[in-house]
Image (cartoon, rainbow, N blue to C red; front, side, top):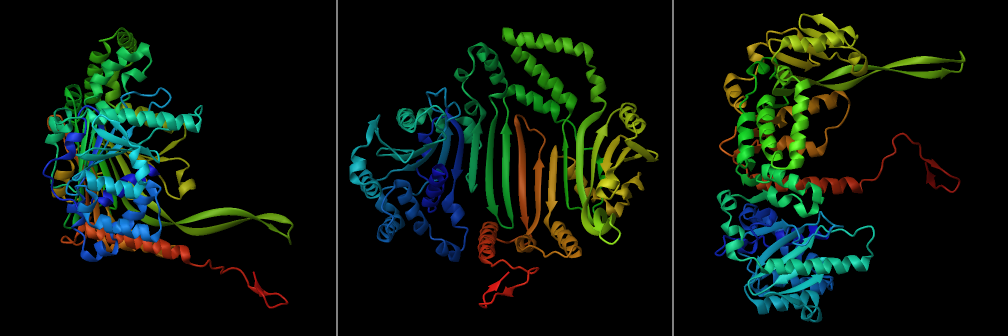
Length: 605
């Protein structure tokens, strides 16, 4: 909880940031950062209207939080004083005119009882050491500050489970994910944590511009200055160090680390007019680049879309990855890695023996690797249910059958297959076992489903497409739905070019939800009314590999193309929070209970 509070506090504290003259990137170690989050609060916060920024004053919220972390006096008078100091950013001696960097790294000396520990760090530049020292004296007390421990060129204080590390250039606040082991006493854990923090302080002091992420070419190349927030992850620094592995497996694991250790991930978020966008890119090393380029040569079968009813299409997801391309290329790279060690060679020998008994080419003829799932509608079904009731007059149990309406999602899932002969082997097995019953050429109903959910579920085998659906209309149109019900051809060209695509149509989802809830006699939730008013569509697209990069874009579209997306999202969140507060205050209503009065006139249930 302290970790979360620290990050929230310092994010809000620097909401007045502007572009920096000298980047604080120089305080982050290039070869140690597991992930880095960059926030641009000034640019983001300035997109909100004055009414919002005035109503949710950052200094008013920040002051009690900081005092809480420091364990200081939280009297109204003291909170007001800290508020005033924070409102004048120069008074506290901190440079609040730079982007925020939050990063994680592993301890240099890992504890075998706490191998998953990470340090979470946040850096703020110091502009005036004297003023900042005075601010710390106010928060923590002068006696506490006088006892700060020097390490390298910085002073350090471990307080409330956190490290404050500062010198004339920067303040770094660190918290950790370290946990007390079962066998540790509280005092032992606190002593170990303090020692761990002071060792980390030495590591922080060893970072210079030359070994910082300022000199990391991959990190610098992916930076998007116009983003409202960004993150970067380096899998080489995320994976547990080899020293944590059993001695006998280190050589083998080192060879596998070379295969996947070079993966890096970056993401950038943008709040635009009428749209929110999060763009994510994966960067692969040479071996995994070869794997991706072989695996993602396949595209989604366009015949799938003949069976997708676009009339009330609520959502859809499709993907395409060649199993043969992935297994062949990945297997080849794994073999290269494994054969570098004696233990790995034994593994490859076993795999070679298994190949004698497995016909991989036959397996690849089953499913080609592309699929599509579509939620085409939600229909109301009359669902019968039975119960037994005891009849006093007949002295017997009687079966009572009732019918009620229930919503039923109508959906279809499709796969491409290579060999109909092999697919039919599974169909024949199901038919002969009594699980499947043939309804028409290429159409089989799955036994017992209708009795359970009220509608039939079908398996369809047609011209290279294997389908699973509960939509009976598809079984009557095996050559494809009418063109006017299908997704327009111009949209199909784009959709089928992606290796992954999905969307959720907010308009159709809300319209369908209102209709079904009305038929069920239920009220439409107020929270969904906010979605109905503002949102149009959520969409995700993953593009084919370009070199060593695979990119995914996630879009949130608003109905008003000119609307301030950030303002709309903030207003919606505030409204939902206010609604929940209001709901919690409502008195419970007992519609089905009679209220009686006792002899004294006191009402009771």
